[in-house]
Image 1 (spheres, rainbow, N blue to C red):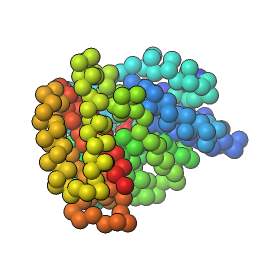
Image 2 (image 1 turned 90 degrees about the horizontal axis):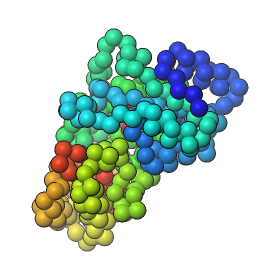
Image 3 (image 1 turned 120 degrees about the vertical axis):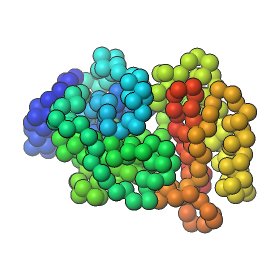
Image 4 (image 1 turned 90 degrees about the vertical axis):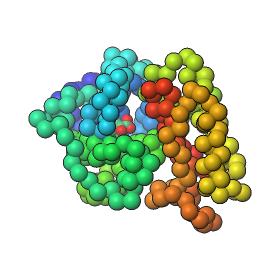
Length: 282
Ligand code: PAF
């Protein structure tokens, strides 16, 4: 297991691996690793001879200073976690200077219709920050494939668009949401939930499954009312948004079309902790 912190070192290492014919799989993370990340690493290991996992809490994608401050940073535990998964992983854990140089700021992208809904609407500047850091990391690592969880479904769509816009040669692979046995989507933010919040949070997925069950008969507005009512009955969870959207362009559903795939998306606060989740509806 190697932990590399300098971008010129990771570049040399990867160049050597590529010259010897190895395919490079990349799993970008912000650390605080959990089984969801392990599943991404496993997908990457199946497809690629060398897997690089980056651990970097990207300052430019946080639109809330206290969220950035309290984001869990657990590098030693993350290294041990990956080491137990496979000895062949390379960890890239750069400083902000290695990634950004002296200018820690976002580039301005135009991700079109994808960026003004849901996460984009509620977290101004977030996707510019994600696009900026991934553009830099993709150029430093030059992977053949990169793996992203569908929990951040909108991020996955944005990353695909970024790759097209920047004409990068990496293939973006979306991987299924990894859940606890009780249905709670795995997230680094779950580490910040209190024991009481942890017992209530599975309500999120339970409600999404209920929406899926009703989707064939109810309109989007009936389902929105249903979800708002459900969450209003749970004191410790506050619904930020619930949306049913076209899975391709993420635009809110107005009239159902039989050939179109839809997903339900939501963001919820459990105290200070913001959780997101989504589900395929058809
Ligand atoms: O999903 C995340 O953890 C982050 O948004 C990512 C993709 C690592 C970029 O910082």
